[in-house]
Structures are given as C-alpha cells and as structure tokens.
Length: 208
Picture 1 (cartoon, rainbow, N blue to C red):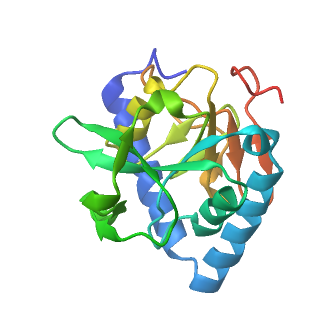
Picture 2 (cartoon, rainbow, N blue to C red):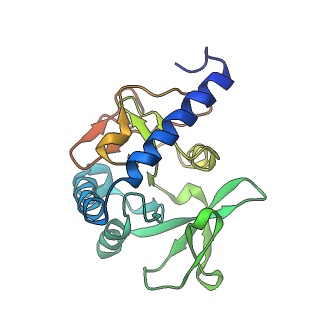
C-alpha cells in the first residue's frame, strides 16, 4: 500500500495519526487504563500462539500504554522464558535481555522506559524468541502498525525467526481502518484490544 506513495507524505500522515492517538490515549484515566489492560491480557492468554510459546518478548509499559505487568507475571507462572528490550542507541536497535522475574532492579533508560539494571542483563539473541508482544500507537486489521517513529521494533521484528509470532496490543480506538505503510514497516500477525482479537489474514502464522 505504502510503496507507491512518497515517503514524506507517509511520514506526515503517520505523524498526524501519532499525535491523535497520543492525545486519545492520554485521555484515559487510571481505572480505564488498568481495566482495559486486564481485558487485553485475558485475550492474549487465550491466544493459541501464547499458550504454545516458550520464549516471549514483552515491552515494559510506560504509564500511558497498555500495562504489561500482568502478562509478564502470567508468563512466569507458566514457566515461560521472558525477554525485555534494552535500547542500544549507538546501534539504533533493541537488544534482547532475558529476566528471571519481575522482582529484579530496574532503571530508567532511553525515552523513560524501564530496563533491567546492569547486573540483571542477560543479553540474548532474537533467534531465541518465538513470540513478540509489541507496542504501537495505531494498528489496522491487515497487521499495519505505527510505532513512535524511531523504528526500533521494525528492526527487531526483522531479526526474529520467521516462524516467531508477532502480536500488537493496544486499545480499541488505536485500531484504524487503514494506516499508511512503507516497505520497511514490519506488520504484526495479531492485534489484541480490550474487545477484539484480530487475526491479520494473509500473513505467515496468522491462520491459527
């Protein structure tokens, strides 16, 4: 869809969507955000790809985002391996760090995101992952995803195994009919909100 469109037009359209989504997301109160996050977590747990997974990459949520704490705790309860991001600004990519539990020490990293403290960082290869739970500011039903504009997750999703499952999570209002996309934008195979679990048809791994 986006490959025939001028990149600057796509970038401008994405910026408008980001601004709108951030404004709507920031309008949620704490109760709404927590309750919707719990509903999203329940839908994630019902996903067959989650039940079958053994090594899951989760983002550590900012206050305004879908809260991932319950998801991570459930993954540990099910004896799954849990990995979280470390921003490598020099390389312009995310490193994958395995954590043993949520009671470790975290520090504030780039963009205000929590990261494991240095003594808790077990850097791993993206090849170990079989499921990635990705944040986003907007999604569409074909798997399109708009992030924060830095491209970290697009680059990470290119480095994981081809058979690994990519799941985007967001609130209902973050799912649009269609979003602008360029060739380097990596789609997700499932989009989960508080009321729906979308299977993005036509993408590998999205049939189940």
